[in-house]
Amino acid sequence: MRILVVEDEPRLAVQLDVALRAAGYAVDLAADGRNALHAGEVEPYDAVVLDLGLPVIDGLTVLQRWRAAGRTMPVLILTARDAWHEKVAGIDAGADDYLTKPFHMEELLARVRALIRRAAGQADTRLACGPVVLDTRASRVTVDGRVLTLTGHEFRVLDYLMHRPGEIVSRSELVEHIYAQDYDRDSNTIEVFVGRLRKKLPPGMIETVRGLGYRLACPPQT
Figure 1 (cartoon, rainbow, N blue to C red):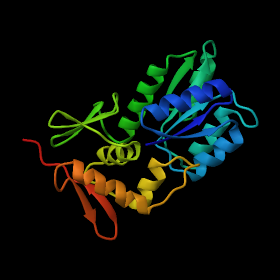
Figure 2 (figure 1 turned 90 degrees about the horizontal axis):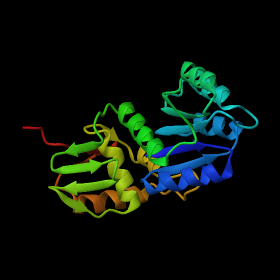
Figure 3 (figure 1 turned 90 degrees about the vertical axis):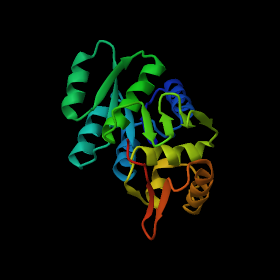
C-alpha cells in the first residue's frame, strides 16, 4: 500500500515517514500544497495524510481540488487542537477522517489502516484467505498459525492482493502501489516477488491471468 504524507513541519514529516514505512507502507512526502496537489492528481495513492496548514496552497484547497477532479483516495486531515472549524471544513470538503495535533502515532496508524480497509470493503484488521491471515495491525502474515517470513516488498504485494481477493490486479498496478515515487521501479521484479510468495503460500493461491495480471484465489468458507 502506498501513502502520500503532506506535512511542512520537517520533524513531524520524518516521524510520519519512519512510522508508516515501519508499518509496511510505501511513502511519498510533500512539503507544500503545490507538490501535494500534483502528486495526488497523477499518482494512485491508497491513502493520504494531509496537514491543512500548508505553504503555497493550503491543505483545504488541495483537498477540494482533488475531489473536484474526481480523486477518491481516502484522506486523513491533520488539524490544530483548537481549530474545530477546520475539522468541519475538511469533512465538508471530502476528508474521510481527521486527527488533531499533537497525536499518538499509533492512533494515526490505526486510522490509516481503517481508511484503507473501508476503501477496499474490508471490516476486520485481520484479512483471511483460506489458511493465510494477514494482520494489518501487526504487519504479520501467518499460514495455519505459523508466522511467515516476508521481505518488505513481498509483504506489500501480498497486502495489496489480500485487500482485493478475487480481483485481477495488473503488474503495473502493483508497481504503482508497492513502490514509493523515488524508488527505481522495475515491473519485472513483480514476477520475482510473486514467485517467492508462491513458494511460501499454499499452492494455487496466487493465480496468473494470462495477459492481465494476478488474482488471489481464496477457497470458499465452510
